[in-house]
Length: 115
Length: 117
Image (cartoon, rainbow over all chains, first blue to last red):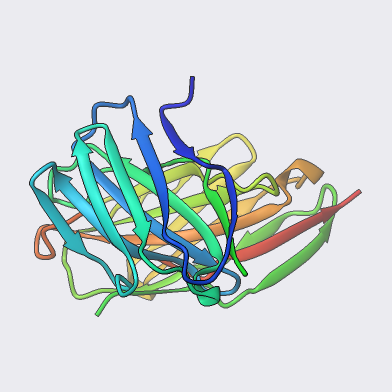
């Protein structure tokens, strides 16, 4: 079984709808991240969480919210989806020592299309 | 501010050619970490290598090799005798050291490599 899983893998929704993307991990890592990938822009950080009680905004958090339900679960919500949120979304985890050396391991991604 | 530049948007080669993907970074941290990830057509991100700023030794793993040069702030990736299965988008990324207090990754915009048979 994969260490980092994301559900759903693909989603089509309409403008204005609320949608939740879920991420689960079995790596036992404390830190979890949500990124979005747009063509030509690489990956950009949306939110990250150091532990269940610690959530931080990333580079592009507007229009998104997150919930860290447990060490192993980190959900990303789009409260009112808009077409420019169409992207590939990745969840990642790291053991996290705060020193930057920890490798981040990525889930398979969720392709989201907002019509 | 931290930044990663991958100036090559797309590279096309014929199988068995050697190819080098360039990565130039900017950071004020004295301790930092550099990464390469591969994104095959299936879409997942696969970790390839991590290098810390104190270790400038080149690394070789099979057909893959990495050249880290602090003097030019570069961390280039070479594939020797490329194969069709190497076709993917490759991302270089930078993580700050203790001064930033996080493991946040700053990604380059990626280089799409196409290897033709």
